[in-house]
Length: 422
Image (cartoon, rainbow, N blue to C red; front, side, top):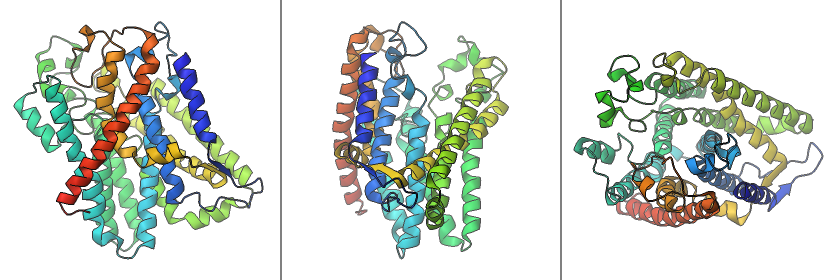
């Protein structure tokens, strides 16, 4: 458990280093708690959390204690959507703040914000992953190569975030540009977010509708050999696509009413904070209950695709992902952290996230035997060489994610400049 204790201790230190406490009086609040200079490092913490989450998902970490349920980094094992919810919350928050404070903000929104910061990086990552996967020896079906390069299927399994972000950004632009009544805009944004959730709940994790009921439980079924029937191939084929996105909507709403919210918390702050945390705990328990008694992976229950269970789980889970941003916002009114490490990752958050799967794949040489590395890209091998390399693996993933993230950022900047998007 040395790796776990070391990383947990490091996380605690980073949450203390550079901390700013406003004071014990309710009226004493950090006036800069929602500023870009403060929320950018928070995204840096979220980026580090996502990387640790991906590391914790490795079979070697889950089996590190002899198959014990509580493996290494267990606190991060199911926490990925929470870290991504932070990104969504402050993305929605920032859009509304810029819309309200910057004249003609929407005039350059498509060019600079949507295409320059979301779409171009998405397609640059596709080219990088295409070259990497080919170099790793993958020989995909020509139709899959084409769809991957076009971005309609997943060349990079972790690249779902920019797809969802692009949809939300485009919806924000179209609604707030063409509809003057902002209450209607918020209502339609809510409908779009819920529609994405419904698409996953019906779509499931793979093309279950391609054959008879429960065909996927038979490993000898010919459909198993079809490239289009697998996991992580199509858009919205996983709960991670949708269970954190509602935080975007809450971020927009909080930004719209920020002045009123801050004024309300200046009286009896500590009591109200306790209430916010209590609600957060309640939503956390609700999520745990939903995942345990209903769940998303219902295709493997033997009862068919289980669409209803997915809907129930989705609607019971999203209150937590939405309320997490609220909880952090309220805490940061009193205490927030800005340090060089968080600022560094904040400036490289999307880049390290997008390049993380290459780092995860390459660094597996520190965990697994040569034979077990002969697996499809992004998949997890079952056997591992020994737990003594866990720390080396985690450190290497972080280091390589940073190096690749820096290079990727430069490539995106060059692409944007060549397209006159800078």
